[in-house]
Image 1 (cartoon, rainbow, N blue to C red):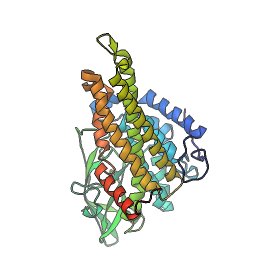
Image 2 (image 1 turned 60 degrees about the vertical axis):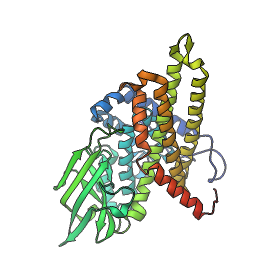
Image 3 (image 1 turned 180 degrees about the vertical axis):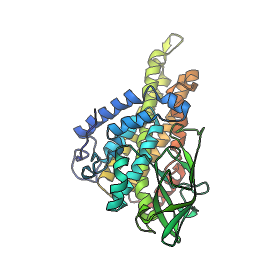
Image 4 (image 1 turned 90 degrees about the vertical axis):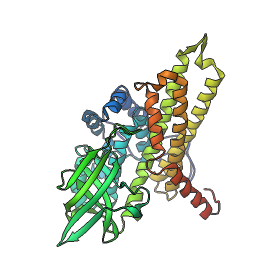
Length: 399
């Protein structure tokens, strides 16, 4: 059954600057539907996906059928018109079983949202319909072998000659890069940052899959090589010079919301798996659930889950309101949720013992994936630097 979403006042309560504790009924209904989808299509298959290091196209088709690939896009363009709280909840539901699948949703949403915000009418008409319908999946191609968060270090170039554009360079660690149909590529044109759309069948583009990652094994990471790829003017997104100051920060907000909520889902998975196991596993004649150490572990896990959930919802709410504070709020949510996921996935493995170290056990995926989540879309150290600098610049003012 296709999930229907609508724009709502995201939380009950007065004023836009305060955190709301209660969600609207539409959000709760969406969450129930999202989790139902995850249980039906993801729960029993995620372990196999990780071993195969690929997500079946049948799952992509099912997500498209439910409208997930157009979830946050305006209804007047054919999208679902949902807010970013709902987008976060979808990532949380999928992340409970497979953060690899959230990675696909993440990069695809970044491409779609960029087109909606910065694309011309002609670009939207050409590229958005197949993206929204899941016929094409987009990927965000920013990182290079020698350059990550430091965008000034990018070496990819677009040169203009006789009215034609030529793309040269390399991108690495691109989520879904080995399987995507359309890439949003960043580089320099006449020393100005530029962003362009590149279909996978472009002559001169070669794609190399990257396998055996620590985490996100099923998300089809890839390395892209561009050798004199010819582009047309209508493949350039926005104005040259805008790519780093406006386009990439805008898109990366969606990436960080995705990672924060996916980490939240992973954390929920740790909690649920540990509660279930502790209720059935005996040591001697005592259930693990009855041991003080287990109860302390579960308490800490639950409290961190609730804290992470509030930070994630807060960040998504501010983003839905187009509040400038959303950038910092999303950074904080991503930072706390990913660190909490890493902390408690380790404890989940420890509680399960030898069983927790077996590849077919969810705790193994949780443990591997959680470390990756502390790195992607801004490492914990980078976020510490940015938030710390912000506090110093504001002389400690706290909103």
